Picture 1 (cartoon, helix red, strand yellow):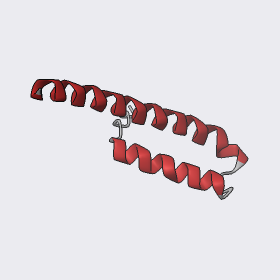
Picture 2 (cartoon, rainbow, N blue to C red):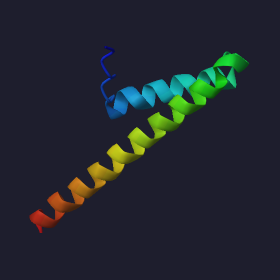
Picture 3 (cartoon, rainbow, N blue to C red):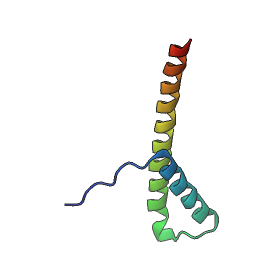
Picture 4 (cartoon, rainbow, N blue to C red):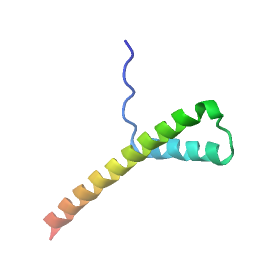
Amino acid sequence: MKTPNPIPTYTEAFEELQEIVRQMENADISVDDLSSKIQRASLLIKICKDKLTKTEEEVTIIMGEIK
């Protein structure tokens, strides 16, 4: 049985996303791999967005407690 990949940290997801973008800009991705790279990029964007949203909510709560 294959173990699921752990969810990457924000930094890991962002760095992997940057690498995919770099590969696309340099045409380093074959047509055969393009679809899977786009799917992975979409997942990484969602992970980053979710982590940023959660962090923003947490900071808002903390700042509210300070006042």
